[in-house]
Image (cartoon, rainbow, N blue to C red; front, side, top):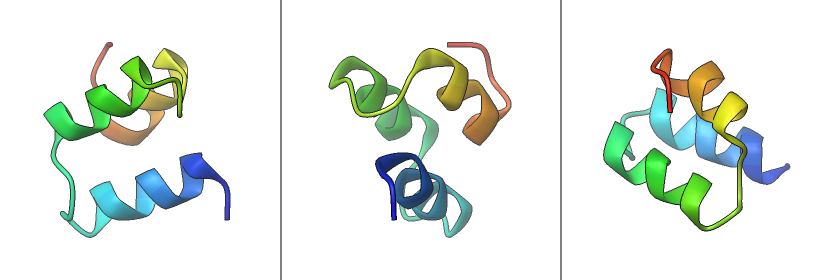
Length: 43
């Protein structure tokens, strides 16, 4: 499972919120484009 798949699963299961997903971008785990794909919000 990739970081993207794992983070998307966390969000889909409501184990992580938008603010937490935003932190994964700042940590370099996902790209801003992947953030938008996961949350449907612009980074």
